[in-house]
Image 1: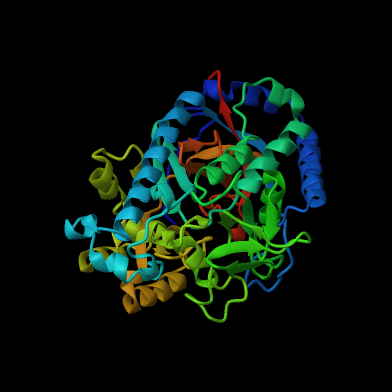
Image 2 (image 1 turned 90 degrees about the vertical axis):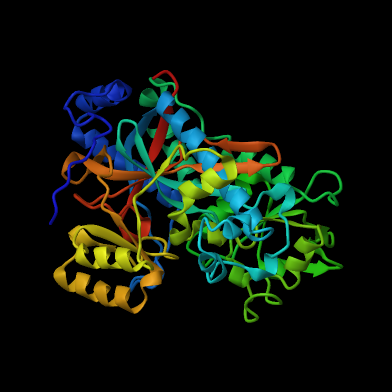
Length: 475
């Protein structure tokens, strides 16, 4: 196994406590382990009562589970956050420009900045959207950008989530639980709020309503139903937003207008925050066997009577092969250098890159270009020889389906685990909201933590947990 050094966000790797963590350090020194354990148990009980669970598809045990919650918050100084915020807004602006272009004039393809086949042969590219413009040229209203930290001023974007990013309910519930369980620690810091996320989201969605909407735009949230792994989040957000939670069977299209059935009769919907994939959205256009979507819903969009959030076809932008061109995409559309770095990436579709990856499988992380949730990937330094050999065969059979990256020295934060307080690797998913009035980033986001010692995989489906993220205003 390859040994790696890493940067610790509490100590900076020097053993000296960084100023932003000073009060956290004192709290950990003053709090006996049995009290920390009690707080952790109370947090678990609260989450069970709330009902915040998730399901793992394809597991032998299909029962819903709690995501482990770590009671030690992750702390980021405000000046550090400002850098992230600026870089995130820049990135999402470029993503929206890219989507407007590839479904429109396709100037980036004519300029040869990225290969045309990377777009047209991409399974997430929707030719039905060619020639269509999203309202205000905003395709991605809600983006979840996964960021990792490797040093005091070193941040890398790990991947872009531009379809239906999840996890915001955990960000909000984590904050609620921390305020209830540790009010004194909370009061000792000036922490930027996240509670206004749903207000910002509702304003964002209403701002992109079609011109044909009358009065206050009607917003609804479309869910695949209670058997979806993220159903808790769907119902949570609908409740917090104060909008109807609907399924496909609750909706119908008449004269290119979307309506929901109510006890008072049909009610028009102007903006639909959809949490189902493109494939299942409209059986007249995509999968004809879908019972989750609404026949004719794409016609309502194309007629200018409905805004879908996020728009159809945004999956091209979070493809991991397209991700590798994000620095060029930012430069092409904005005339700027990307503020946030990409992780160095080998495109296995290129013969030289494939050769390098095959020779260095023991050092690299290899991912499917359309993969998510930690599935379909190889973490070379932690894989067995047999696992690497099986992955070698997959690479040789379909190299264009994979990219490879170095195993970054992800930063660590203190976590309360079975052996006590110990460093664990983390990433961060901030949420960027973009509406007609610009972009906003809620200060914080979802910190995911690898609860197992030495693990770099933070996904909940792979045993990862979450923790509250504090942006300290006075640091």
